[in-house]
Image 1 (spheres, rainbow over the protein chains, first blue to last red):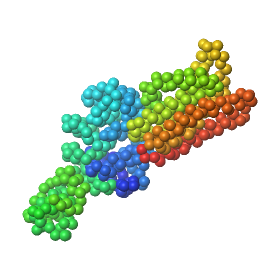
Image 2 (image 1 turned 45 degrees about the vertical axis):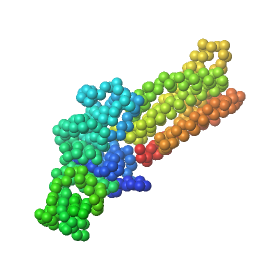
Image 3 (image 1 turned 90 degrees about the vertical axis):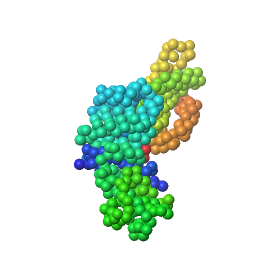
Image 4 (image 1 turned 60 degrees about the horizontal axis):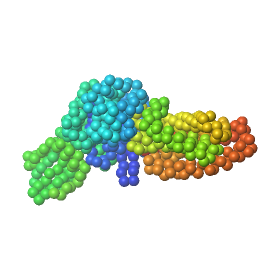
Amino acid sequence: MNAIEIRNLSKSYPLFKVDNISLEVKKGYITGLIGPNGAGKSTLIKMMLGIIRPDAGQIKILGSEMPRQGIELKQRVGIVSDDCFYYEHLSIQDMKNVIAPFYDKWNDSKFSRYLEQFELSPKKKIRELSKGMKIKFALAIALSHGAELLIMDEPTSGLDPVFRRELLDLLTEVMQDEQNSIIFSTHITTDLDRIADYIAFVNRGKLVFNDVKDDVLERYAIVKGGQDLLDADIRAKFVSLRESAVGFEGLVDDRKQAESLFGSYAVFETPSLEDIMYYTAKGGRIHA
Amino acid sequence: MLNLVRKDFIVMKSSAALILIYFIIFSIVLVSNNMSAFFLAGVYTAFTTLMMSTGADVKNENHNFLITMPINRAQIVRAKYLTALIYTVVASAACYGLYALIRTVKPDLSLQAYTLDQLLTAVGITLVFVSIYLPLFYWLSKKGMAVINIVFMIIMIALTPLSNIPMHLMRERKISFADTTVALIGLGVVLLFIASYFITKYLFNRKDL
């Protein structure tokens, strides 16, 4: 069962386009949506939420079609974004009074508990909140109406390490209910190293992969060796290759193939998500 | 949709005192300068309140937040039209009430009675303004809002002297609300308001926020 199903989604701008993306986000898991800044992560999320109208394609969230069944569907979805679009002149209490009546399953005592946990005063105005506090408030809202799916757009950017860790623990807690799912867009991949089950990588408006995190880390490899190991055919096997006078270092997306090619003549390392993102974003040959 | 109307009133709560001050200033200016156009105090107050309300919606790109709640774009537009209607009725009624109060408290001012025609004219003018303003607002949003507001302010200021002409004609010709022409104008205003809603809904539905 998928929490999100995206089919052939496209959106064109004068200088950028989201190009025919199809993506499935599994229900009951945390999916990290990674990619460099400007890769199309936020555009993709905004299209899921109906903020941006796609040029083509279909979006199904929790089995309901967007935007046709959006009203019923959004009862079950919580949104946390680093962009805070709340009414800045209102207090947290007023903002809650605006939001709560829209949700059938709003839980006031749960909301108060989260405010207490996040040390947020209901009297505080939204404009007085720091970026981290705004994220906390958005999270308190999202968790107080029984959302089955959390859509989080760069929630950890601008957060201090203490709250970042706290947030990740909280998300792990949310996932104790197997019906819940989270899609978490970020360019800070270390957060996903800790909690993500699946990784969807978007680069230049295209989906590079969407796979189980551990499989991705097993499949990719950083290969290091001497220049004498390279020729034109070998170079073509690399996602990205960094050459210097003394040797090379590159990313391959088929570790087994690379191991059979280089044998014991090269060194193989397991890349981090950041390595995969960096090398793929750079692409081709990088001269050191 | 009622939750959206409620949202508008919560958002505007902090501006209530300012709106009241505007209403008093508009009333004082119009009573002291031009009695025949006193009903415009209702038009100005309702429309200024609407502009403040739309301003609050785009100040921090709040549509991006609204659309993530369990509502659709058509409901956002419909609620804004309903809110505008409420502002119009309340402001026109407040204007009527204040005028009646001034006549009672200050009989020496010899004010003419505030007629039903004037009350309906105030409502009609406001609805025409709303019908033109809201499609432009939802189409141009934050980018064009400053320009739209300035243009509408100029039109409203120009309205004071201009409104004397039809009101004078209505008094001279003793046209009453029952008159077919006035009734047709009223119907035209209602149809314009409804058409405006559908145009706005269409524009806002297609828009990227």
